[in-house]
Image 1: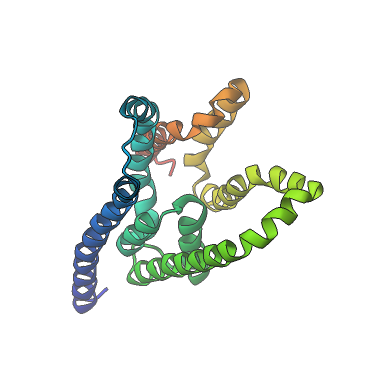
Image 2: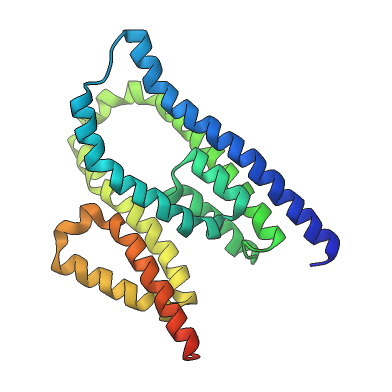
Length: 230
């Protein structure tokens, strides 16, 4: 990378962070505005005891997941892709796969200028396509809802497929990452498989183990690096 390209990339990242912070703050306000407007329009307030009990049970888990997603996904998406993905959501099963596939096909890394731009474009296109599909789905859902409910075979097929979408996407991504760094992946992978087999009930809270396995992978990488195994 020459000096001019480095300067342009630095200016691009500064502009991305500036705009990204503004739109992230705006998105957070919009998210909060929806329930607030419902309360104002209908003249109601939450039942605070139930609200606090529900928040106490789920907020710690989601804060942990949200924090670890920043550290896990940001290096995969670059600055522009990160802001756009976290504002539009649906990272695990749409934005991250879209960005990784685009960069793998082009043969570039997210740390490069090309990878930074390509990741942002992939996330943007994924967001647009997702939005269009949602709009079409909302338009079509009313007339086909009754038909789906009346079709027992279709209901059974849909209920069976619901649990396989995210595992299939992560399985495809897993093959890419594991094949590139199998020495780093093998221990966390074996541990999680063994844990799920021994204690199946943890499947519902599996996301809590993501930060633990991430830290373990970092520690193992450090040890292997010192021993010249990687």
